[in-house]
Image 1 (cartoon, rainbow, N blue to C red):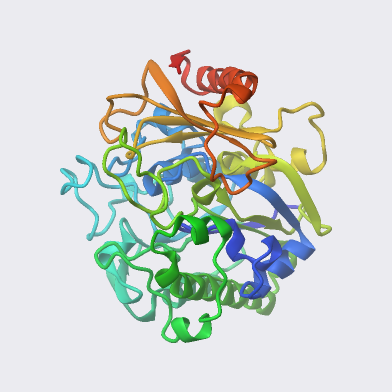
Image 2 (image 1 turned 180 degrees about the horizontal axis):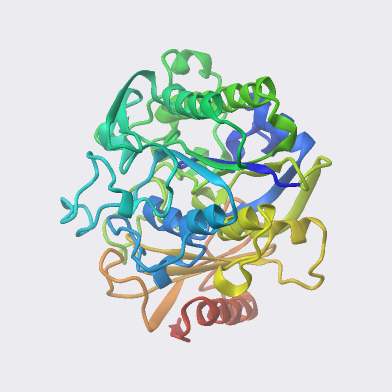
Length: 450
């Protein structure tokens, strides 16, 4: 059987915004339902907590340091075979909707030299997607919480009025309404919510969010570390609730069209948000932002796959990385890319086909620092490259300790024990794991110093 596949992903959404991950306000009934029908990955982590690099990985199945897309403002390079190209070769039609963020190039935080941030993305920069297209390269530049515009496959500007998440979802419904069924489809819906609105530096929830979620309870890390969550969290939750409502509308449309039973839905986020509570150390590059760090608040994301072979209401506790999504999507489509893409087929994790697999994940950090992260069930260990600007270089040959957390005693990562002699052996073990990861991912073995 050939399944239709929908990859529905949000931007900057913490795992603990979802009811199936413990959010007490029950704002994600659709996702919770899909988790109950399919597979929930309890411990899924982003491999790169910045929008552009993570999206580059999603489209290529390669680490950002391999494609060169290690930070924002770098387009996908030519000559790298993409997810869209593989899946179209396999007989699928494609649709891409929402935020792209891979078609402009220039210095970080400056006007790009090749600039499609607010204009139509040329076909050659669409990563191999040849079908239905309703996207903007940098959606937060062409829209706000309400109103904005995207472009279609023929470069026509399409204006929309209303709450942005609703309108982006409407384009997905439009695609399903015109779908003929001649081929199976692969549709990506790249929502920007619950990302903060850049030019306003705040989260823009639907009208009434502040009142609807006035009784919010902050996650413990945000409560202790402060940041700007106390004022921003109601709108953030409003954005997350809106995403789930729209996911529900999409499920309803699939059922209306008789497509639901033959469609696999993947829900994830590119990374989380720490609400300006991290990245304040003296060795960093002046960032006081929402991500760009190796803490769970930025890396731990929701991941639910429902439909087809991903069924039975399973809860997977093993650590997995969303770096595996391109390979998994292609496996669902019947394409085995082998070592051409990083990661693993997540169905193998569900079916426990790899006994003895290391229960650990790896992340590359950019912009705030040149950093690397290894995480196991017990420890989170991170390093940074002293004196190197994370917006100028993607890797280094020398790193220093950044932080180490004992996750059994300190799950919210509030007490950095990287210099504590009692953890010398734990640090040595995590350092060895991290060096192995770097060598595997980047083909080099740097030095790490205390």
